[in-house]
Image (cartoon, rainbow, N blue to C red):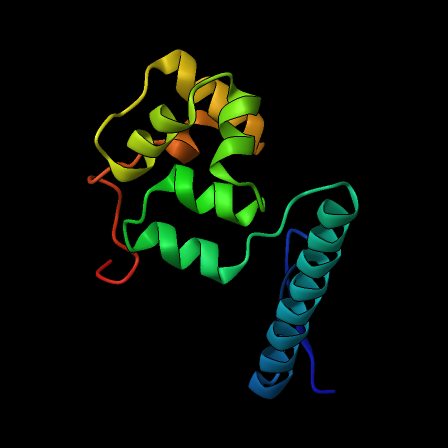
Length: 133
């Protein structure tokens, strides 16, 4: 390889290499980062991080009621979720239909029952629409 070392005060300061070698080094560095990212993702999954199916993400992005989306994703009926959260089925139905928003206490109970954060259950019209940027 054609390599030129430029020194300053007797110490190597710069290395001049052919451009194709530079490009190969960049590609190798990017590949190494991809491998590290993959390994980290695999470890997070092994540590219990949940993978969210695209159907859930798309339903949320398209404005479907988050409580309903997460309840269905968890495979719960309205009766089961209402019982676990300590509310009536009719109250849950009203939350899912948008007729009621639910108190902070109720949303916290629903979030705990669904294993999500309260933020995951709040329908926020100001969130960025992933389809429009």
